[in-house]
Image 1 (cartoon, helix red, strand yellow):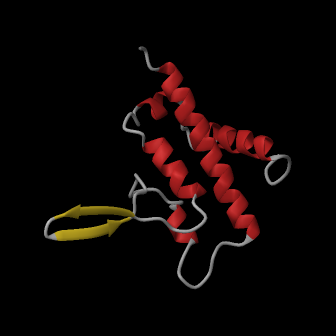
Image 2 (image 1 turned 135 degrees about the vertical axis):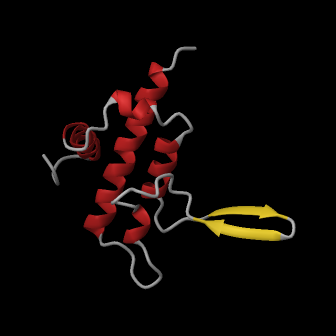
Length: 113
């Protein structure tokens, strides 16, 4: 179903791809217990590249809040000052964001109160 269907169908297909092709199982996702899945989703979902701001006197800095340096598919690579992603690229980024949100919800549901 890749590249077809409704938003929900596309997100479900992307989540299945993450499980089947990338091995991002529940056991893998449970290791990300500092909201990394949600932060990655926010980075993918943002309509343009986002930065986090940190201020400690006398310093201020802006940094990429994406949680994984080693990721091959960083959303920031899709954005630059000269050109925004195409419609197809934007939809693909949102599919990844939705799948990451689903993974984070599932992870939280597995947490014992």
